[in-house]
Length: 175
Image 1 (cartoon, rainbow, N blue to C red):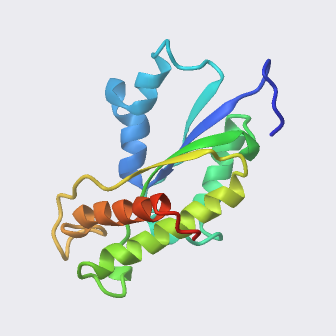
Image 2 (image 1 turned 90 degrees about the vertical axis):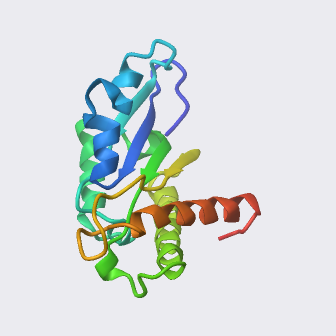
């Protein structure tokens, strides 16, 4: 966590669901990690690590006792990196429709936004040198209500949760 211009590392970490892991890590040459590892303009002191795990929705990440956090610590340990080195996060989360108190819009998006805010506050505690968090919404789901954990239109509506969260930040909301 101390500045070390000679030997220091900056960790860029993904947080999210299985889609996040796929886009970040396993998309072959099109994945974010593949592209960044081959990008000669990337600062060589930046380590890009995948901390996204399938089966862990925003509500799970919002629970400090969830195994997503243990898995995340293991990712850092396996890379011989410290939580104090994490400065950048890309986060893409969804929530399960069967856990939502009200799966209709806008309540579903508001509930998801609240979970995202909890996770972001937890990330600030876990990674005290975190400088920036990039947020993405779920791009699509091939399921409809009754199929899967985050079907349409819930997947689409995550975009409103991310939009509203960013608008809160921009407007100076202290929460």
